[in-house]
Image (cartoon, rainbow, N blue to C red):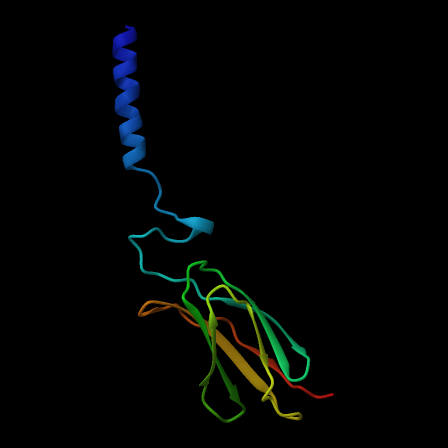
Length: 124
């Protein structure tokens, strides 16, 4: 009886290991997946321009690429930060103009979708 229980437990352990989840750190898809999670814009503060903050939802991005637009224009590339960075100061934002921002994660040649969009105006 003991031998049969040990044998059954060994078989069950192999089955459980083979069926384990593929989630990596922080609930990210495992190495078999190419999906990258988009960063999440958290806020914009007026600070010698517009200071953006966001949450990196994929921890192994090579870089974060940010874009901005004004009313009546299309999004255009503005900045790139290392993947571990979660802030950017847009010191080129003109007073009286409203800017809309979005960010995406880049790893190798892969890109996440874009983040949510946030708008701000650097009025004094």
